[in-house]
Length: 419
Ligand code: LLP
Image (cartoon, rainbow, N blue to C red; front, top):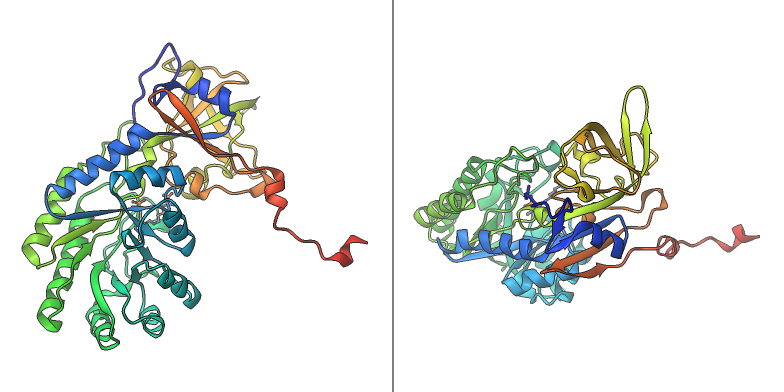
């Protein structure tokens, strides 16, 4: 969680007051600070690249806005893409095909054909995917995703590396998979695993690296196959709560790279951070539109709900909130911050001590840059909101708000129902 200094009881973002941004662009709005984005990228990139040759594959599922992708492209990032949609978005943002890695799951043959036609390397998730790919293109750059039987994450839904998850080729079969790939004429260049998301400790990353290194070594010894890179996946957590500490990425980088350097002859490490790069760069600004007090609770009704930010409802995730136009004032009353969606599970924050609220106050929801807009929806026929990029005191709209017309655009009513 980033600490923001108060500016005459106004919350500043990227050299502007949050209130001014909300007045100009309306609410709800996601506001991203470009400086913070570049700083995050540089911090993690430096931590690894001072140890060994490194590729940072930004996991664009966290936030695939074109402006954010452009910034990361300028910084030298590579991309972890999960779908043809993400591949096309990143190509549109200017990433060359060979700086993107398609890591899908349950990938259709149609999607494989499309990714191949774009020249984007493919990280294979299953024997089935490998065999189908070999019938489409034998000389295509590939790597393999192993299920390392090392899983971790902030919620069951996001643990990907455990044995029972749907991801990757089981550890016990991975050497066989490489051997079959070679027989099929494919030329695997790398080995990948991803343990899960929102991991706050270094230990699971060390464990997965050890699994990957021992597989790479076995591939060298048994198949004479020397890989170019080991990809340890993403999942680096961030402190969503005030009392939590950020991950020591220098330590993380040392622990991972020292094991690769000493355990096998692979020369490049790849990592796939999404959340670490974008989460704390962005706040969601939402206006208090309705206040309600019952015998049980005090509700602040705001104009963003789980259609705008689903993480609190979906994972029970904690996002810090503050009152942007009463910034730095002590908390006085306990509120549930709730949205306009017709479900009781529609809340952004519960039981939070805030300054006394009035209609028109501006709530800032912190650390909303990862899986915030990306997971937003049109539920209850509510158009998705704007995104704004702020840099050194100036703000640019990077996504226009949708309209109800956008929601209706692709619907069709059979003519027999029109009479
Ligand atoms: N690499 C792979 C193969 C992944 O599946 C993911 C995330 C990442 C990298 C990036 O993980 P990150 O560094 O962002 O934690 N919607 C959930 C998170 C789901 C993550 C899915 N995969 C949330 O809001 O917490």
